[in-house]
Amino acid sequence: MEFAELIKTPRVDNVVLHRPFYPAVEGTLCLTGHHLILSSRQDNTEELWLLHSNIDAIDKRFVGPLGTIIIKCKDFRIIQLDIPGMEECLNIASSIEALSTLDSITLMYPFFYRPMFEVMEDGWHSFLPEQEFELYSSATSEWRLSYVNKEFAVCPSYPPIVIVPKSIDDEALRKVAAFRHGGRFPVLSYYHKKNGMVIMRSGQPLTGTNGRRCKEDEKLINATLRAGKRGYIIDTRSLNVAQQARAKGGGFEQEAHYPQWRRIHKSIERYHILQESLIKLVEACNDQTHNMDRWLGRLEASNWLTHIKEILTTACLAAQCIDREGASILIHGTEGTDSTLQVTSLAQIILEPRSRTIRGFEALIEREWLQAGHPFQQRCAQSAYCNSKQKWESPVFLLFLDCVWQILRQFPCSFEFNENFLIMLFEHAYASQFGTFLGNNESERCKLKLQQKTMSLWSWVNQPGELSKFTNPLFEANNLVIWPSVAPQSLQLWEGIFLRWNRSSKYLDEAYEEMVNIIEYNKELQAKVNVLRRQLAELETEDGMQESP
Image 1 (cartoon, one colour):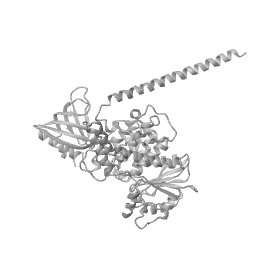
Image 2: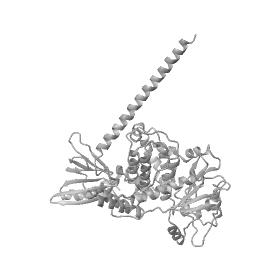
Image 3: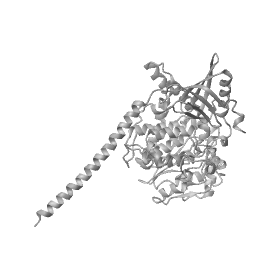
Image 4: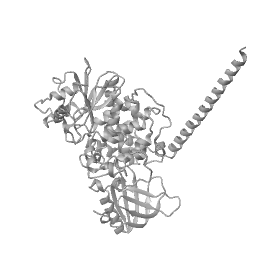
């Protein structure tokens, strides 16, 4: 298919662009295969380059011969284009609709993008499972790399290489995979070097109404326990939902077959409930007519902060089991690709200082989201504005990033990255020139040949010039476990995401710059103090030598 077939009108003059916090701009609107571009001949006027894949929905209005297109973006931005001529307006609208809803992944921009920067590091090879395993292997010999899934035959949503107990062979893993939802047998998610406890994750066991069991599954899970120790299974569904799953062939671990494990149910919502919550929240944030009571009522009715609280509470529980109880844990919900990954990754941010560095957090995203099979292509297909909702769209990753922001806000000196880093990840998960978030799992990415045909996001992010934008000037390495508060008063609306297009950040930006200047000035003064101290010590040494006979 040629993009030209979808572009009815490639160019229109005298189009007026309206967008938040910018004066209206008149210029020429151009449509390409992947971008909507508005350029003005005025000096000092920024051009608009908008990826079609960032467009969530469009509305059309007509007043006489003038047509208006309202473009609603996946990053929650709303922009308006005033287009002279009804026919041109209709042609532009239908072209945008066609180009923003392409079915084939291989027609998306990452397959056509050519970087304008020198590639210093191939991000596709920055966080390989073998490298991650080396970090653990120095502390323990109880685990091994398994290549049982190298052809994606055992579990289509797992990577080719996983970490499993050394005492469990590949044949046993195949049997366990047949007993777990989607073939997602328990694998190592995190090893706590302080006490040797581990977080594992999996899909639900397929016990069904007959109480089916799998000896290999029981052996695998028990292989992670120390002698005389108990473990915890954290099920991210309510007991009622887990029991209902048995009627569909799913279920949960029964105490009789897993006597050394205590099961805890922590209900975390999923799918359309989260999507509806996001829609309500964005609607509330965009409505400028609220009085205080109505705003607070609509914020509460969205339940967004309630979902944040549920996820953070479960992550804190997981971290508590590991660090304070000295117990290993297995985490799963139904598939093990959504709420499970929210909890395992947040628990690591609480427990592991490396996960709070830039590269450590990138490794966490790669390991616990991309390689672990979170279906980004499905979950991030639409955002808060699209009317044609499919059942698999859900802001699971955005909720995770929001939870990280909540912890970052409570511990502003413990993270090497800043809020802009989290916002950037949100934007690229929904629309990007990079191939990192394309596809739903490693198997799909392999078939699409993304490593050969697209650029990795990490190749761009990890350039020194880009990293400086995402580095937290307050960062001081903190090797302790950090315990976020999940009290309602401690959780706030993430204004940097949900209100950034509704009110100017000018004063916040100025305050941030002033803070950076103060920190730099403080470093200069500290350096001078150190020089003066050295000079003083040298003078005192000389005086001592002169006084001695």
